[in-house]
Amino acid sequence: MSGKTTTIIVFSILAFLTASYVYVLNNPIEISIQATIGNSQNSSTTTSSTTTTSSTTTTSSTTTTTIPTTTTTIEVSEKDDSVTINTDSQENTEIYTGEFTSFDGFEGENQFNLDALVDTLPEELRKSVENNVIFVNGCHSYAATILDRCPFGVWDSAGTFKDGSTNSNWKLSVWVSNKAFANNKAYDTLLHETAHALSFLTRTCVNPEGENQRTKAREFFGSEELFADALVLYYGGDYVYYRDNNVLQEDEREYLANYIALCCES
Image 1 (cartoon, rainbow, N blue to C red):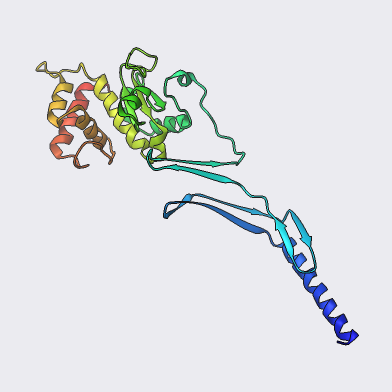
Image 2 (cartoon, rainbow, N blue to C red):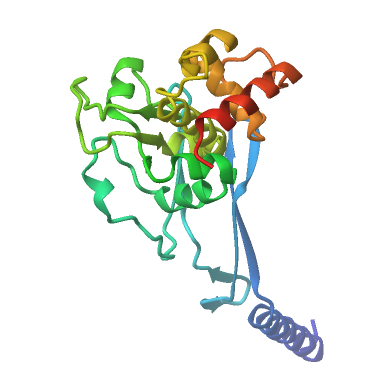
């Protein structure tokens, strides 16, 4: 091979390496971190970040690039219907620090979210309970004990401790757990448990004939739970726990309208 040919090849290699180096410096690298559970991809946990090259080492034949990333870890327990997704992001999360922190079973991560949902309850229902009922984000300890799992929600009129004794500071409380939020059932749960609260608060209401209206309502709908489900539908909800359908019949709607007119404060 002639000296001239060798010189041309050397200059060509140097030109290629120079062009590659300039390209890496001027073209950021996009990283998409996606969490996949089972066979379905969970797009809501997708994290995407764009970073520039932090260091470049060049030899005669290779270019090595180091890129800082955000780490996401996922823990899945199908048995407990639980998924935990943790990231090393430094974003701050506001945590509730009020009186509920002493309540047995209080969780708190969604307390502010729950407060916001309470504000969106139908006005008539909210005003009927708001001066008497507290709303707690937590896994009610006694309910979790008797069910052997954390329920979505609980209505506790007696203020019940884990051992079944009563008279705690959380009398007249609606509980909505983190589990309900994780399963997108927080508002449905809130509406159902608040319906129980309304039922309880009107327990002494009597009609002109002297009959207890709450007792009559339970008889009309079939049980306390079915009465609560009917109230959920009356106030615009569409998710019921105990009814066979989510459509109120006209006589049911009329019954509830008369009940509320008689027993709830205007």
